[in-house]
Image 1 (cartoon, rainbow, N blue to C red):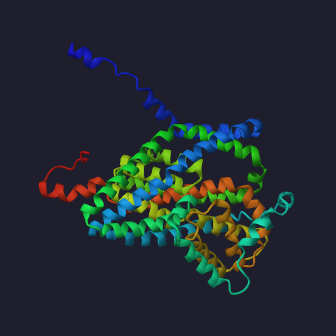
Image 2 (cartoon, rainbow, N blue to C red):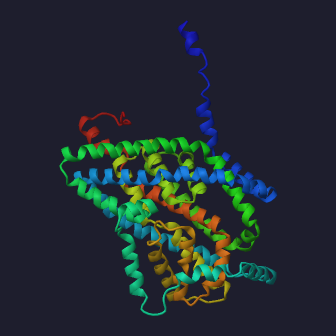
Image 3 (spheres, rainbow, N blue to C red):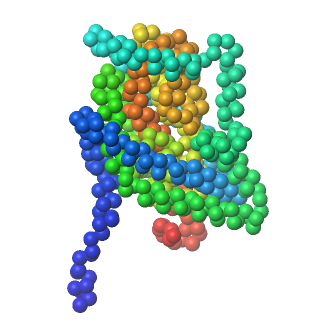
Length: 454
């Protein structure tokens, strides 16, 4: 009787099977391909169903700020009360320098080797000119306000950046989605709360922890709709722009794609080594995060997924992860650094403007510094700031702006993937795993290493 009971097949778990199918990389690729085909051959249907995806994106984004506020304040408070945690902040500064240097180096190298702006085919150059002219005044209207002022504008620009960092009304910053201002408030509030005696701050800490857990549950619910939202958004984008801009800007998209996948490959390797998992297992574990990044094209909207995956599935220290992920998302701006470097070199090649070594160094330094100011910006505003880099080299950014706008969806996806993967890898590099955190205790007790019981 006992043998028959043991041999009986387990009941089919349809939820687990559905989750595996929805999170499979094959499902993601199939939905992307189906979205492209739907946008090309049934554009009316693609536009008709686009509001469904927008509603889904609103569901994803509505938990971002509560997640950010609760996790950062709670983590900062815990780290202030634990002096050993302060050592992680210095490592974040080193990560910013290393990532900025590598982003400029990788995108600059691909741009100089592949020369995407060197279009030898006369017909292709004519089509590029026709496409720019067909956009009317969109490039001038959108790009002109972001040109640097001709005189004594440097100090004003620096002052405006500093003013934008500090909120004069935190509730207004929360309502308008000013992520950097909210993050600064959370950091300062968490530091102050860490100095409050624990009996007085315990109730607020428990409330923040409850908010964080509720947001985690919501993000787990929303994973069911990701593949379908991906299909709808790609179908709508393809129906709006078609494939012609992608063909004309194929060389530039190749540079951005190679740069993005270089960072993805390295990030997966770092996470795999730190979590002691195989490379393919790491890819499958992080696949929901990649789907969120592709669907939302928002680094901020992906933060809850980064925290959840690093802690729940890859077993890194929750307190450190909750602090480092939002902080590094604001500072590790890999995507914009790739955009500014490769985009400036593309424009220089397109108009036959030779760049010497001092010019290349200037592009790299300005691109890295400018990328640090892009936290919380939309993709068009990030793109428009390329005019500052081009302004130093006297390059005609306004004329080429329409080309970048036409492929903004693809470029923004590459930027988000690069930034999100970098944040995940850097956090995995700095944060201790549960096994490392338990190692001193295991050494004293001489118990064989094992996963901690939760």
